[in-house]
Image 1 (cartoon, helix red, strand yellow):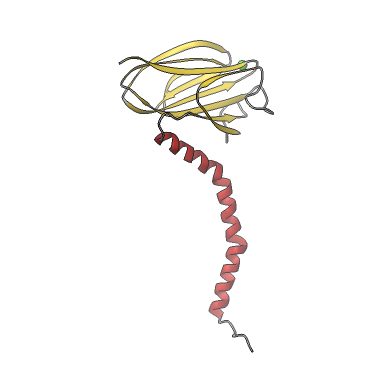
Image 2 (cartoon, rainbow, N blue to C red):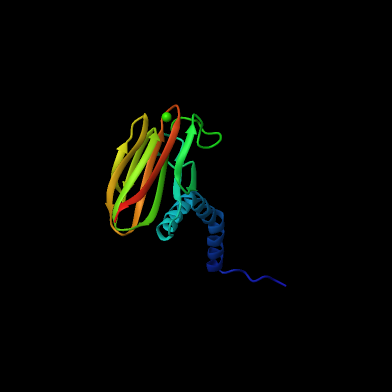
Length: 178
Ligand SMILES: [Ca+2]
């Protein structure tokens, strides 16, 4: 019994397949793997946009400037933290971290009051508009900003950084008049 000799076209096709498995597949897997945190982040953003009354998505950075990829991402039902002189996560440095919380929520038509306190810096955004900024080291006890909101869904962003010493942050909002 003799095996049929493959034609040059078949040999070329087999070589192409081998090359795909040897080079193409690993490259594809590496690309997907490196994109996966980014894809997970985007998926969470999409879920936040369509879900009703979702928690805040907190992205925690091991630097005070919200730079690079967050080292931790988690859902926080409310922004009320008092880390004292400790870190936000075990094993983290207690100083020089930052957090960006985002949330999409449905508002009624009316005037809303945003209230907050922080140590250290804080920024608040509504639909990308900066409505409050105190992005400097220091303790800040209960400030507030009033803002008229149109009925419908709005995107809220809170940025926070801890410099040194104690660390706390609280942010809330409520309808003050219709
Ligand atoms: Ca501090």
